Amino acid sequence: MPERQSSRKDAIRNREAVLAAADALFTRRESPEDVTMADVATAAGVGKGTLFRAFGDRAGLLRALYEARLEPIRQAVETGPPPLGPATPPHDRVPALLDAVLCFKLDNRRLALALEEGGSGSPYRAEHYERWHSLLRAVLEQIPGLDDSDFTAHALLAATRADLIEHLAGERIAREGMRAQLANFVTRVLASGPSQGLTAEE
Image (cartoon, rainbow, N blue to C red):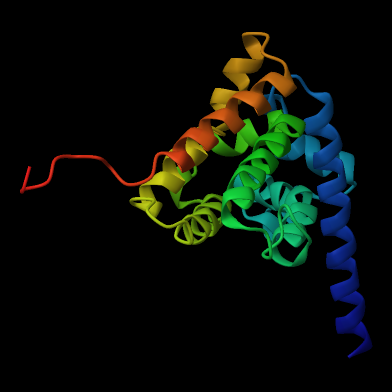
């Protein structure tokens, strides 16, 4: 039993070392593609075999690092106070959630871009995307008269895609400018209400 506990502690220690090394490398390098699994293993002081056993592949490492950085926001969303926490009125919570996604991706531009462009399947099937979409859809469903919360959640999240954020940053749009534009867009969507098409009687 002591040997098994020691092995588990070693695995946890190695995982933490790998995540810290990957975090530092993605922060320093200009392009996410410049960071290889070999680079991470060397920086963490572990063998490549250890790295692949723990994370599977480069995409798995990216997902793990992304989730580690996202953890404070996840806790705020699940149990925190307004404006992110569950007690927030939906009209206030939806803009706050999307602002949090935008700010997170601005703070983690290289990592977010690497993850979304990683070629590991549809980005819409990624666990982190499905979690945000499910949350937004559930909050949108609380708003009376808002049509199709499922599609609306997809459309709102499209405004926070990492490649769009990278493009806007390249156009020299400042952080606060992006946040203001997103807030205005979300406000218009939430204010749209039910569609105003003609009825059969008309």
